[in-house]
Length: 465
Image (cartoon, rainbow, N blue to C red; front, side, top):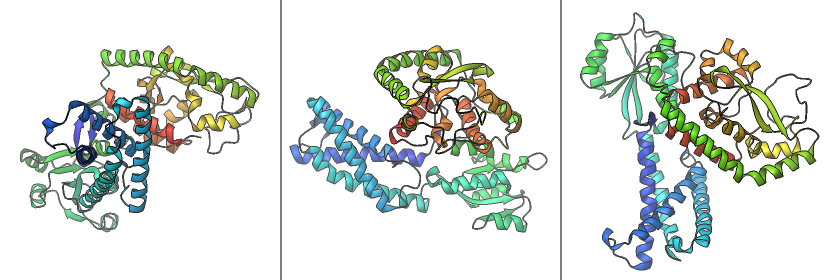
């Protein structure tokens, strides 16, 4: 995997997306050659032509992203793959048609895009079939060995098997002692017994990484053998860190305070805080002005649909545990919790009004939180704020839950784009894993990734309740 701005990316995924971009660019370039009979030499093309082709490439890849064609396992169903590719090309055509209508000078040629569709579909299908073949045969995957056989080892193995594009191939496990339970839990993978010849096993299997997946390391960790592997160029990776790297979340049930204390991350410089606040202030001001007509329309619709105030205000826990008032458009009937008391929203919640269903589906009910961002109570990206009554309850049962209050809460967050809506303690635990990962690895790049995924979720109407 490669690391950029404290974020880990699968090398295979990076090559796949970059390669697909080059193929899209090449398809349009080839169509340009056929239409204009251009020389394919780079110097023969004007700069403006390169930029026009780049515009088509960017829009095409964004369309592929919004059709989930950069998600895992999308190549398992080839009929579905073909349909999604056709949909993506259709969306690209519509978006480009709008751009060309508004800016005629951006058009590369009347027939260029239509000719490029043929090359585009051929290139994309071929590229994805080739990529699927590479993944199945693990042609460029780094070989790795897991040291251990407990819950952590099982979790790592499960994630690697499900994430075929992670660029890792677990060749075997090394356990202290083999028993029947080990054989039953790790069927289909080679198991070596004993920690005395780790280096020899790694060299024999050409393994570049040893993942220490021991649930308990004290008195068991084979320091001498691991040091021998390290000095010979084999990467030794802590199991909890490896899990974080490939999943984008922290395994809070198994990490101890010392791991958090000595791990890389949790950097919050004054410059980054000031920059995030300035961006939030400017962007929230711009969006409040931009969406003011929509805000007025929603206010009228809510008032006509049901009795009660237009805005819904509620106390939430913010940065450093300080409470503040969060604002949303009211999407439930007034006094919805009068009988039940504080409860999480459920799927098809009967308390939701007719207008409420629409604004929750489109996430329009969140628009008043722009005022919270403007005031400085919230950021655009961060852990979602929770109610004090739930925070006090969850702090007692979920480890490190209080640490999510070390940053400002957000209108959207890493947990929101990686995990569906949660309405129970188990869901709160899963969301905390992502929230702590975000806090540990905060960066402008991660914020942009979250915003991009949020836009996709909002436009496709996913995950709302």
